Length: 303
Picture: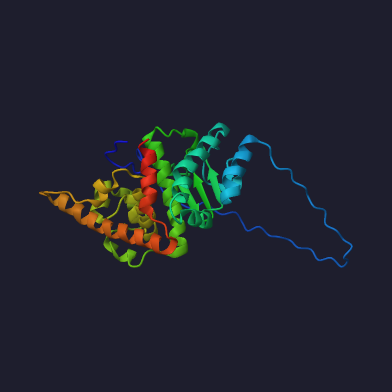
């Protein structure tokens, strides 16, 4: 796959995109009754396993091996009521599941220590939304992660693995959200916040930056400038999915003759520090080599 420039999956056309968390449903209260007599019995509700082809597929390929519940039917509690969404078409669910198996699950569980890490830290729920998630003001949310427990993926109804824009958007979202699970459990790498402290944008202003300005500041995307945690997650995502990561973000341009070229190389020097810190952090705390995962992802992208 020949890629000249990354697709900023948080900026589509002229619509500003934001990552925000869905409102979690209220806590489930388990009511336990106390009985005076041991003779009282509580009837047990019998459940019959679903024979629906889709439910069986989810049970066999997600629930049983990884304890991942897949929510594909629209349920109010999975979506903030202020958001506008369209549920996924049923015919798109299994293709989307196979996409996640191929590009997310298989690369992680195929590397040394990857299966243990994935099974231990994968969120317990994946929610599919057919459309983009729209805020009341018309801005878009392309994916969310809720405290490491749930990942929500949008635009399932537009599934097309031959469409580079759709493909990069989904890969960027799933790798980004899964990277949040890493720092939520193991914090950020030591001194990560001190690598480019002056480059972070003020609250709510990341979207006014261009890709070029972000790079010169030492970030892989404008959204990465919005917070330390987003910088970490964005850098992990771009490391894994973007084919030309090294040419664009890692390797210095030779024979610089302009101020912009020198500024890009200064930004790349900062990204290299983040890159090395992230690789060491994953290796130390999970035993997983992200470069081995990248190699598997890139192999799939080149097929």
